[in-house]
Image (tube, rainbow, N blue to C red; front, side, top):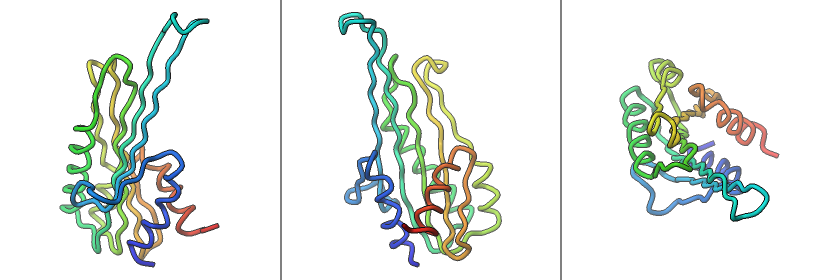
Length: 167
Protein backbone atom coordinates (compact mmCIF):
# COMPACT_ATOMS: atom_id res chain seq x y z
CA UNK A 1 0.00 0.00 0.00
CA UNK A 2 1.24 3.48 -0.82
CA UNK A 3 1.21 6.46 1.54
CA UNK A 4 -1.41 8.38 -0.44
CA UNK A 5 -3.69 5.32 -0.43
CA UNK A 6 -3.28 4.99 3.34
CA UNK A 7 -4.28 8.61 3.86
CA UNK A 8 -7.31 8.20 1.59
CA UNK A 9 -8.28 5.13 3.63
CA UNK A 10 -8.07 6.93 6.97
CA UNK A 11 -9.80 10.21 6.03
CA UNK A 12 -13.33 8.70 5.91
CA UNK A 13 -12.94 7.79 9.60
CA UNK A 14 -12.67 11.53 10.32
CA UNK A 15 -15.47 12.71 8.00
CA UNK A 16 -18.26 12.17 10.51
CA UNK A 17 -17.05 14.68 13.11
CA UNK A 18 -14.33 16.67 11.37
CA UNK A 19 -14.29 19.13 8.49
CA UNK A 20 -11.65 17.78 6.08
CA UNK A 21 -9.65 20.02 3.79
CA UNK A 22 -7.36 18.67 1.04
CA UNK A 23 -6.87 21.90 -0.90
CA UNK A 24 -5.05 25.00 0.31
CA UNK A 25 -3.57 23.24 3.33
CA UNK A 26 -0.57 24.40 5.32
CA UNK A 27 2.67 23.22 3.71
CA UNK A 28 4.17 20.55 4.07
CA UNK A 29 0.92 18.77 4.96
CA UNK A 30 -1.30 16.95 2.47
CA UNK A 31 -4.61 17.25 4.37
CA UNK A 32 -6.14 18.89 7.43
CA UNK A 33 -9.14 18.08 9.60
CA UNK A 34 -10.86 20.44 12.01
CA UNK A 35 -13.30 19.70 14.82
CA UNK A 36 -15.20 22.41 16.70
CA UNK A 37 -17.69 21.89 19.50
CA UNK A 38 -19.69 24.57 21.34
CA UNK A 39 -21.90 23.77 24.31
CA UNK A 40 -23.93 26.08 26.52
CA UNK A 41 -25.27 25.38 29.98
CA UNK A 42 -28.40 26.95 31.45
CA UNK A 43 -30.28 26.78 34.72
CA UNK A 44 -33.95 26.04 34.01
CA UNK A 45 -34.39 28.78 31.35
CA UNK A 46 -32.11 30.19 28.65
CA UNK A 47 -31.88 33.56 30.33
CA UNK A 48 -30.14 31.89 33.31
CA UNK A 49 -26.98 31.25 31.31
CA UNK A 50 -24.28 29.45 33.32
CA UNK A 51 -21.43 28.67 30.93
CA UNK A 52 -20.12 28.36 27.37
CA UNK A 53 -17.76 25.49 26.63
CA UNK A 54 -15.68 25.42 23.43
CA UNK A 55 -13.55 22.44 22.46
CA UNK A 56 -11.49 22.26 19.25
CA UNK A 57 -9.07 19.91 17.52
CA UNK A 58 -6.86 20.58 14.52
CA UNK A 59 -5.42 17.50 12.79
CA UNK A 60 -2.60 17.68 10.23
CA UNK A 61 -1.78 14.77 7.90
CA UNK A 62 1.68 14.30 6.38
CA UNK A 63 3.43 11.65 4.34
CA UNK A 64 7.12 11.09 3.68
CA UNK A 65 9.32 8.39 2.25
CA UNK A 66 11.66 8.18 5.26
CA UNK A 67 11.03 9.83 8.61
CA UNK A 68 14.26 11.09 10.12
CA UNK A 69 14.63 12.82 13.46
CA UNK A 70 15.15 16.21 11.78
CA UNK A 71 12.11 15.86 9.53
CA UNK A 72 10.01 14.77 12.51
CA UNK A 73 11.08 17.89 14.43
CA UNK A 74 10.21 20.12 11.47
CA UNK A 75 6.76 18.55 11.01
CA UNK A 76 5.99 18.71 14.74
CA UNK A 77 7.06 22.36 15.02
CA UNK A 78 5.10 23.37 11.92
CA UNK A 79 1.92 21.61 13.10
CA UNK A 80 2.24 23.02 16.64
CA UNK A 81 2.81 26.65 15.55
CA UNK A 82 0.13 26.47 12.84
CA UNK A 83 -2.36 24.94 15.26
CA UNK A 84 -1.66 27.45 18.04
CA UNK A 85 -2.24 30.29 15.57
CA UNK A 86 -5.82 29.01 15.14
CA UNK A 87 -6.54 28.90 18.89
CA UNK A 88 -8.57 31.78 20.35
CA UNK A 89 -8.66 31.32 24.15
CA UNK A 90 -11.40 33.01 26.18
CA UNK A 91 -13.28 32.34 29.39
CA UNK A 92 -15.47 29.66 27.75
CA UNK A 93 -12.58 27.92 25.98
CA UNK A 94 -11.93 24.43 27.35
CA UNK A 95 -9.27 22.96 25.06
CA UNK A 96 -7.82 23.11 21.58
CA UNK A 97 -5.79 20.03 20.77
CA UNK A 98 -3.34 19.90 17.88
CA UNK A 99 -2.68 16.54 16.24
CA UNK A 100 -0.20 15.30 13.66
CA UNK A 101 -0.60 12.01 11.80
CA UNK A 102 2.31 10.93 9.62
CA UNK A 103 2.39 8.05 7.14
CA UNK A 104 5.87 6.89 6.16
CA UNK A 105 7.59 4.00 4.41
CA UNK A 106 10.63 3.90 6.70
CA UNK A 107 11.26 5.27 10.16
CA UNK A 108 14.60 5.68 11.92
CA UNK A 109 15.20 4.25 15.39
CA UNK A 110 15.96 7.73 16.76
CA UNK A 111 12.59 8.93 15.47
CA UNK A 112 10.79 6.07 17.24
CA UNK A 113 12.28 7.21 20.53
CA UNK A 114 11.55 10.88 19.85
CA UNK A 115 7.90 10.13 19.00
CA UNK A 116 7.30 8.64 22.44
CA UNK A 117 9.04 11.54 24.17
CA UNK A 118 7.22 14.29 22.27
CA UNK A 119 5.17 16.32 24.73
CA UNK A 120 3.88 19.78 23.95
CA UNK A 121 1.41 21.57 26.20
CA UNK A 122 0.24 25.14 26.62
CA UNK A 123 -2.18 26.57 29.16
CA UNK A 124 -3.95 29.88 28.77
CA UNK A 125 -4.18 32.09 31.88
CA UNK A 126 -3.28 29.23 34.23
CA UNK A 127 -5.86 26.97 32.50
CA UNK A 128 -8.75 29.33 33.33
CA UNK A 129 -9.00 29.98 29.58
CA UNK A 130 -8.24 26.38 28.60
CA UNK A 131 -5.24 24.49 27.32
CA UNK A 132 -3.71 22.80 24.28
CA UNK A 133 -2.16 19.34 24.03
CA UNK A 134 -0.20 17.83 21.14
CA UNK A 135 -1.10 14.37 19.79
CA UNK A 136 1.41 12.61 17.54
CA UNK A 137 0.92 9.35 15.64
CA UNK A 138 3.23 7.87 13.00
CA UNK A 139 2.31 4.85 10.92
CA UNK A 140 5.12 2.90 9.25
CA UNK A 141 3.86 1.12 6.12
CA UNK A 142 6.90 -1.18 5.94
CA UNK A 143 6.47 -2.41 9.52
CA UNK A 144 2.64 -2.05 9.54
CA UNK A 145 3.03 -0.52 13.01
CA UNK A 146 1.83 2.70 14.60
CA UNK A 147 4.00 4.73 16.97
CA UNK A 148 2.57 7.51 19.12
CA UNK A 149 3.10 9.75 22.09
CA UNK A 150 0.85 9.38 25.13
CA UNK A 151 -1.94 11.59 23.78
CA UNK A 152 -1.86 10.04 20.29
CA UNK A 153 -2.69 6.46 21.30
CA UNK A 154 -6.34 6.79 20.26
CA UNK A 155 -5.32 7.78 16.72
CA UNK A 156 -2.88 4.84 16.61
CA UNK A 157 -5.77 2.46 17.37
CA UNK A 158 -7.96 4.17 14.77
CA UNK A 159 -5.29 3.86 12.08
CA UNK A 160 -4.57 0.22 12.83
CA UNK A 161 -8.30 -0.54 12.78
CA UNK A 162 -8.83 1.15 9.41
CA UNK A 163 -5.58 0.19 7.64
CA UNK A 164 -4.93 -3.35 8.86
CA UNK A 165 -8.53 -4.50 9.23
CA UNK A 166 -10.63 -2.73 6.58
CA UNK A 167 -14.30 -3.60 6.94
